[in-house]
Image 1 (cartoon, rainbow over the protein chains, first blue to last red):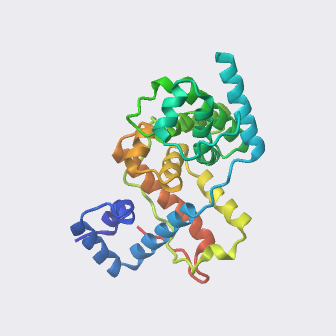
Image 2: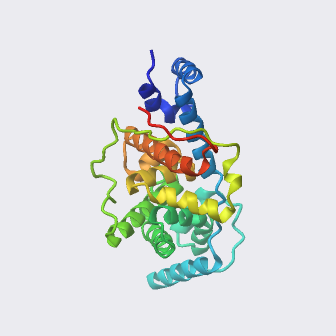
Image 3: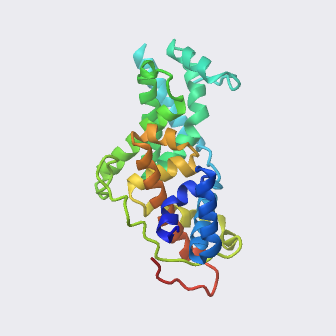
Amino acid sequence: MLTCKDFLHELSDFLDEDMDRELRAKLETHIAECPNCWVIADTTKRTIQIYKGMDPQPVPPDVEKRLMDALERKIAARH
Amino acid sequence: MAVTSQAGIDEGVLLAQARDGDTRAFAELVRRYEGKIFRLAQHITQNREDAEDVLQETFMKAYEHLDQFKGDSKFYTWIVRIAVNQALMKLRRRKTDKSVSLDEQIDTGEDTVVREIAAWGEDPEQHFSREELGKILDTAIQSLEPPYRSVFVLRDIEDMSTEETAEALGLSIPAVKSRLLRARLQLREKLTRFFKRKGDDAFAYM
């Protein structure tokens, strides 16, 4: 019988769908019966989704210019 | 550097050209990855100025050591490794942060503590403005210790695989997995304080 602690231990692989079918079925049975673990799985999944959904910020033009200038100086110094 | 029209060129070709001294090819590689490296650096250092330094240092070092890149890993994984090392060095120099080594012994074992269990409302992030949400997410990441923060940023923000993350950080796969679990649980806990459904109170558990 799977405990909450066992479930928690496997949570990341469960959310990443990185496990065999047999273990997955056991974990699914556990969350169907354990509201606390269901909440943890659900909110952890949404935590990951929120972070994944963050817009990548483009590098601000002034930062990019300083980067390119620095590289240019470096390249010039080598030749 | 001059504007180039190399956007469609294969990475392997660009690398070969850059190794032969083609600076436009290297500039194109920079353009492909600067956004990701800058974001990663901001997340790990939590400081805009440091992140800008990390961005520059990463590509300077990459250029300098390009002949050492053998192509047995992805170019991106290779520069991420440089960037993470530079970012951790910044944290170490700041000294306010005492736990910035990726190698130090950290407790990853039994205490994946879950203190707060409360269901979230539907689309709870909609209740916050973009700026507020950004601040909540940043503050939560900032509260993670750097070894956990680095793993989370690479795996869940940069979307690298467990294997790539292990390679970029010089960690074993089990170490990546246990740190990731702990980071995710800690962030979940922090976000729950903002996102829990009204009327749901936290209760002790486990």
